[in-house]
Structure formats: C-alpha cells, structure tokens
Amino acid sequence: MINSIDYSYSTYTSSERTPSNTLDKDAFLLLLITQLKNQDPLEPMDNKDFIAQLTQFSTLEQITNMTNSIQEFLTLQEGALQAQSASLIGKYATVQANQITVSDGVSESIVFELDEAAPVIVRIYDSDGNLIREATSSTLDAGAHAYVWDARDSSGLQVEDGTYTYVVSKLNSDGSETEIGGIEGGKIESVKFKGNEIYVYISGKEYPLASIIEISEEG
Image (cartoon, rainbow, N blue to C red; front, side, top):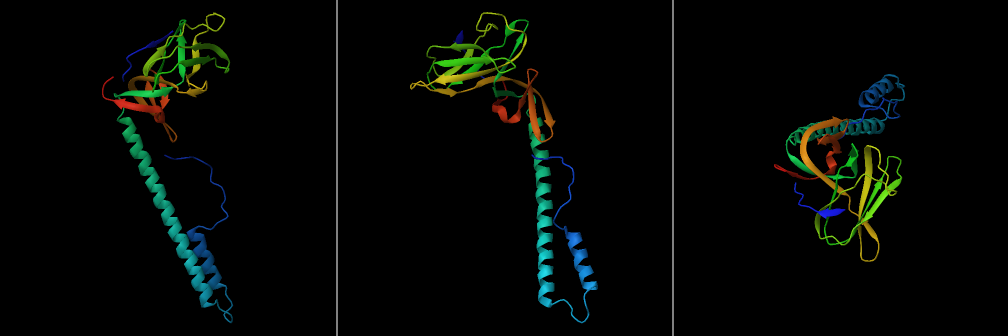
C-alpha cells in the first residue's frame, strides 16, 4: 500500500606515463643548443629563424607554466572539497535513491515525493533486472509518500533477502509517465574518498556525494 507520510529531513586520475610526440621545455632547449653548436659557420642560422625558435620556446614555457598552475589549482580544489565533505559527518541528509533491502523477509519502505497531485507506479526489479512487482496508486496529493512492499513478487511468493532496485514514476494526464525516483534520509555517519569520487554513508548505505539533495543540522 502507498501511504502519505511526514518525511522531513576533482579530479585525479592515475595512468601510466606514455611517450609523447611533443617536446617538453628542457628537450626543446637542448635541441636548440645542439643546433647552434652544429651549425655551419659559413651559413649560420638566420636571425629570423633564431627569433622564431626562441618565440616557440617562450610559448612552450608559458604553456608548461600554465599547465603546472592548473594542476596545482586542481590539487588544492580536491583538498578543499574533501575537507568540506568531511564536515558533513553528523549532519542529516536527504539523498536520491533507487534501491531497497529485504532482510528477514521484511522490506524497507520506498519513499518518494510528488511536486503535484498524481497517481504513481512503483516497479521493483531483482538483481538480474527482471520486473518482479508493480503497484499503481490512486491519485496522491503533492508531498512525501511511502510505498510499503510486502516483499512478495507478482505471483505472491516471498522474495529472497537481498538488495532490489525500484523505479517510481508519476502518471501524467495524457497517460505518459515521468520518473521521479525515490528519496532516503538519515544521519551522515562517515565520508569515504575513492579516487576522485566522494561517498557518504547513511544507515550503513553508501551514496555518491552528488546524490545529496538536502542537508540539515537535525533530522
């Protein structure tokens, strides 16, 4: 059944170094010096050619310096984002969600929010992506609602304990559907950094930092 409820609530990539087709600043300078040493005294390098190569060197140096500055900025930005993320621990967050857990034959509730009155369809899928249950509601008021799944499939059989994926869609007046997704809320217990991704843990579940849609001091 679907009930109304009061529900409040960088970038670093590691890769192997590969040979480059372009010269770095030191290699360019070494090549220029070698060229000057080995030039024909009777036909020295033309001044225009020499100035042109110096200009290339200057441009290459500027690009190198700019690249280094960008990398330093990205490193600082990543550190600042991690520090800000760590400050979320202990706060309450509402996150976008699409999974529920069945434990000892009991399912978590599926919570969602409507921006306008409308009927909804809840579809539940197993780990292989098979649709195992579908429920359609009557018209629900705008606001937060919960679908309480009895942990049974469309044949009435009890499903196994585990994690299931769900999709909540709003039925429009023209018969089309608009996916609205689900939401979950709780206290942020910890923050974890995985490469260039940041995750928060709420009630033992992992959520990407980008899935947070609201943060508050109290739940």
